[in-house]
Structure formats: C-alpha cells, structure tokens
Image (tube, rainbow, N blue to C red; front, side, top):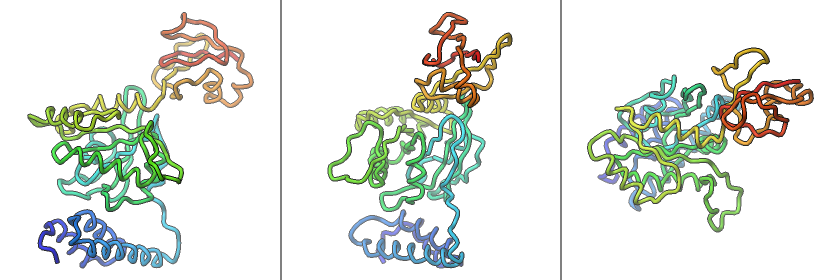
Length: 328
C-alpha cells in the first residue's frame, strides 16, 4: 500500500470495512476515491475502488428486489430560479446555503459532509431563489444523476475555496462539466464533441474571502483566469458579498417582476409575477388566468418607461417594476 495515503483516506477505508449495508460501503468507497492521491502508483487502487463501487451498487439494487430507487436529484423547481451549487470537497457550499436559506445542510470542517442534495429558499427583496447544496465532485467522480440536476437547473454556481488553489478548482469544475457535456453559456463547443451539449448560465462564487490578504488573492485569481463569467467574492463568516451574490443570481436569471392591479384599487406590491425578460402583456395575461388571453382587450400600465395609466395592447413588452391593470 502506498505510504502517502492521507489519514482521511484511512478513516474512510476503516468505515468501508465496518460498513454493514451496500449503501454504506458505496458511500465510504466514493470518499476513498475522492481522497486517494492521483498518480501512477495508485492507478490499480483507483480501478479497484471503482469496481467495488459498481459491485455494491448492484447489490443495493438487488436487495431492493429490483424496485427502482427514488432519484434524490429529481428536485422540482421552486421560486424565481433554481440554482445548483457545484464544488469540490470542503469549499463551503453547505455553509453558503445555510446562511442564505431556511435549509439545514450538514456542515463540518472535513470533506464529503454532504451526501445528498439539500434545497433551500433564499429570499431576495420580494422574491425567492431555490439554492441546492450538492455532494462534492472531483475529476475522478461526479454522480451522473447529480450532473443531470445541474443540466436541468436555471443557473450553476461554481463554489471555490480561495484558501486552496482556486485556479485549479475553477479549471477542474469546468472540466467536470465538460465531461458531462455541460458548458457555460457562450462557450465554444470543443472539437470532437459529437453528442448534444447543454449551455448553462454560470456564476463563480469565490468563498472564504474573510481574512487579511484574501482580497489580494481574489484579485490575483481574476487576473490569472481572465474569466468572462460573472464572479463574486463571498464569506459566510463575516457575510461578505452575500447580497451581491443574490443580486448576481437575479441578473443572471433573466427575469423581471411585474405587479397586478385591480381597477379602482391599489396595486399588490408584495407578491409580484416573475416572468422572463422580454415577456409581453399577452403572456402575462395567460399566467394570471388561461381565459384572460382570449378575453384581453387592453391594459393600463404604471412604470418607469410609460406615462402613468398609459393604455397598451397585448404586444406591449413588459418592463421590470411595471404595474399592470388588465381590462377584459
């Protein structure tokens, strides 16, 4: 056995030997695979671990009598946008979700604490975003079902740890997504990639920027990556950048908020309709009630780009903050 195996690997290996169920064995093996040093001397060990993972997963399936297991990554979208947090071990995804939402993901100062996705709702002004904490990924392993969740999400947030080679983490996450044919919106498709590609809106959150000198490290990261992706520096410890993080999500989501008004009454400014930018009055009418599309005659609009109470037709393009009084 190589002498340079870290203590955390040996602990995971002990948990594997003591595991009593196939699921517990798979969990320990996946942690071992993520922690084992990557060099030629461990190639056979890595292959053996992967073989055992596959074997125990088959055992777990047979134990359930062939009944298809529930996909824990099949999470329905809620709120104004679904945002999946993607990152390596111990980057602080769970802490970020816990600080911004009502969720309570397990948090600990050691890697691989998160074993299943944990969604939570993050309030932003008068709307909410769904943030989903996920198990850590590495170049060696990323659960295909989890990557399907990434593919379905509205926004992907790459969470990096500023204290541990953020440039390497950034490049690894891009490579992991590319391995699953997921690319940031605006990217060029690599030569030789023949299967369909999914383009996603991607935000980079550089975490743990809370100690002296970390701002300089963040500036260096930006200089080295020269990334065109939106980037925000955050810290749960002192709440640095948390508001900016949610604002970035709002900007990326490509949505606007419009408010309904009943003739002769004050508008409801507490619960806006959230629609995609560029939506028309006709589309909003359909959101309010399916019969409104056919019956719509006109609407009066109060907003920053029109005269208050201006009459508009069904092809009017809504603007953020518009107050809409529909007449049928």
